[in-house]
Every structure is written in structure tokens, then in C-alpha cells.
Image (cartoon, rainbow over all chains, first blue to last red; front, side, top):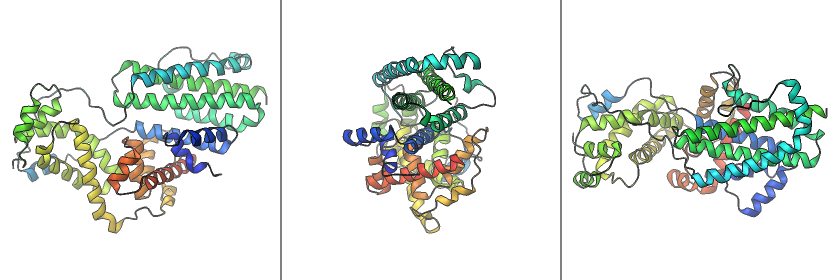
Length: 225
Length: 190
């Protein structure tokens, strides 16, 4: 299903809207399930695109290139151990990353407070949420991808959205938008500096926060079913 | 064949004191050092190969990869170190790819409705082949949408840059990107 805002979702995601349009679209997102779902899918697509691995061709073109430029292909390069190069053009400043992290902590903390009384009971039955920092449990679990776990939980939330009160939905969606934005930004930073331990840890922690928030939200939906 | 251009001596002078191995190798290669050029080639091959196959499809990659590095060898004298060598090479590669695209245009449909091609791509969201399926889905996008998607979402170019490179209006670049995402979304939903 599409509406007049659907065609603006990419511009919103890419921060190409002016402030007034952005505010109007965010207001629309508070009550439009279809646009919220489309936006979540777009974010997932962008993250996948940025995570694509480069690969070498099946055949080494060097002999043909060497022949064309008139050098001996059999010489081989001299040894040259050097650090991996940044792959792409994504860049993200540390101040921006810090600001995103602070906003993320403040907002997801509020959501946790809102959801906790009910979610705690459900989680006690389902098992404790992951408490270790680092790679999210859903990522580490064999045969179970992070994307899949997030998609399943988001589906539960979308389908059960109508059973939650408006204020709760608003807080949830705002938090998810902030977390998604933080994940995209952290992924950009990691893509530009893949060896940076802090950035990798920050990305993993941000992904874990999203998974945890979705788990709590899904538990809340189940509790009011 | 020595790379043409008059910039080699200047480049060598500018490179003194640099610690960037690529910049040093670019200097050496510009003066005819094939070892240095092969090091640059080995270091950037996977990125150029992936860019080429995503932009054009696997059928044409071998020739285009050759063209990119032959052109780079010929143009090394124009590399001034104002940006990283990888950035310079990547931009050169985009230009070569876009030039090839024009040649191939007679047998491709650009900016035409081809979203239905994604219907033939299997969707396996939860399997190890997911990444390859996503690559395949990108490859099935209509040419115009795929080029913008690869340049924007995979490579990180801004719409204004893409519009200049592809000779489009910025609004067209945005609409092609949205179209690509919508098509990929439909594929991933299946």
C-alpha cells in the first residue's frame, strides 16, 4: 500500500528533506503503519548495501593488462604488507557518532522505562535478555541471522500495533527511528574504518539495543493480546 | 610502455615524505615501475571488480576491469595526490564504466520499466546465500535504477555527484534510487 508520503521515504532516509517536510513526514509516520514498514525495509536494504563484500574476479586480469601496457606479467609485485584500505566513501565524524549515541541512550532508556513493567514478566518466562556487550546474541547464534530476528520482531510489532495505546506506539517508533539511524551511522563509520575496535563495539551495541527494544515491544504486544 | 604525461617528475617530488604506500607506488608507477603498478592493481582489484560487476553485470566485467587499469596506467601522470589514490582510481573506474555503458546501451534498456526482472530471483532471507541473492537482485534492477543504487547506497556518492556523473537531474537520481529500493523491497518481501 502506498500514499502521498511513500515517495518521500527515500529522501527522508537520506536526509534530503527540508525541516518542514521532515517534520510533516515524521508526524505522518506516527500513525501510518505502511510507511513505517516501508521505511524499516529501506533501512535494511541500505544496511545490506553498505555491508556488501567486495570480491575479486574469477580470472586474474593482470596478464592481459600487463600485455596491453607492455610490461612483463611474470615479474610479480615485490612484497608489500600494508593495512587494509578503506573500502568506500562513507564517513562519519566522532562528534556525530557521540551525539547519536547520547540521543540513543536517552531515548531508548525512556522506552525501556515505559515498557519494563510488562516486559520484565514476559522476559522472565522467555529467558533473560542478553546482558553481554559486543556482538548481539542473535548474530552469534548459529543458523539465526540478526536481520531475520529483527524482521520477525518488527512484524510482530506491526501486526500488534493496533493493540497498543497511541503514546506507547509513538515512543516505540521514535526510539526505533533513532536506533535505526544510529545503526546506519555506525555502519558507515565501520565501513570507513573497519579495524576500529570502538566503532565495531559501538555498532554491535547499537544493534543489540535495537534487538532488545524490539523484544520488549513484542513482549508488550503479547501481554495485551 | 611508459605511462604518458608530464606529471611524473612533479608527482615524485610531491610524494617525498608521504607515508601513504599507494601514493608512493603511484609515484613509482608513473615513472614506469611495473612492480609498483601491480601492487596498486592487487590492492584495488576487488573493489574495482565489484564496482564493475554491480554496475554492468558479470558478462562484461573482464574487459572493463582491464580497461580501468590500462586507463589508470595511462593517466597516472595526472594523479596529483589531492585525494587518496583509491578515490582517484574509483572515479576513473566510474568514468570507464559509464563510457562502456553507453556502448552497451544498444542492448540494454536504460531507465525503462524492468522491475519485473526481479521476479525471477529467488528470495532466501535466512540462508547463507542471502548476500549473494541480494547481489543478484541488484543485478536484476533496471539499468538506470541499478546505477544510481550502486553509486549511492553501495558506494556512498551523493545525489549531486551522481547526477553530474550520469548526466541526470538531481531529482531523477533521487527518483531512480527510490525506485530501486522499492523494487528490492518487493523482492525481499517474497
